[in-house]
Length: 293
Image (cartoon, rainbow, N blue to C red; front, side, top):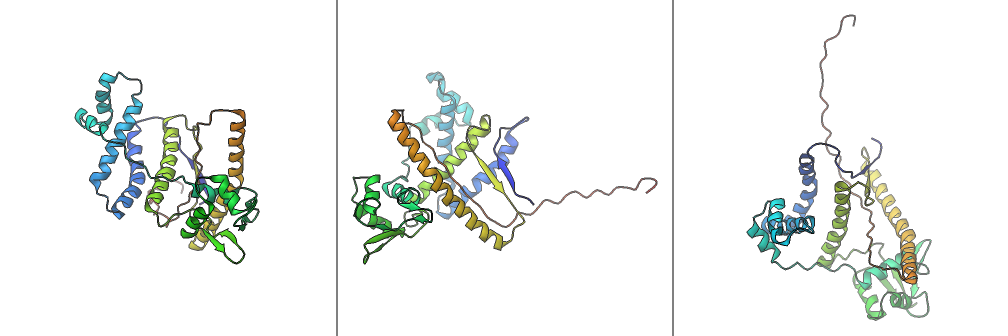
């Protein structure tokens, strides 16, 4: 089958509940897999879902009469007013921090001249004028010493230091903090959450509020999937190398023009590979021959 592109668009006609409930299977199954894998019982996940329903209903009722707000939230969610009151009294859970000096330093090293060339991130002198690791660290933050940032990168397996030449180089092409569980699930929540928010906004809106596209291809061999994995990785590196400097230039232009810098952007690329799902059997019709056959 030829590769096909897919996008989210608002439903055209009819009751949207039935296809939505079918889509929930695809959304909830990996979430359940994560919870089961980490010992989170369904009661805890259900509590989070109730909180999310109340929060979404409150946003949908923005501007409503405050005295009738809980009743409207109850009607929209199916929860009792007492349950709505209980949930709204709960403290908002703290979200894991994902943005840090390390992640920004890593991204700049991967994408910005003069620390990155046509073949990728450059090996840098540990100290000295630009380009050096010291100057790169100073461009990110002056609150943390460059030595501390370098030690953290080396500890995470993201960088290596050559003591003889007093240089440092990146040893990984992606920031994946394997030994920091809170940060890993924080990335999961941020990345998948924003992706889902973009798709939901498109489905509930005109369909073009956010860029949200995918490419699907089947009838591939396992050998081809290995090649495709390399293609996707190369495309991501190219995207980062081209887009990050342009975003940096936009931020600098905003600052010079004194425009309010109160907006944010998350741009991602993902791939999922698996055995082809079984294809539904096509109905077989037995037709009687007509006269003359």
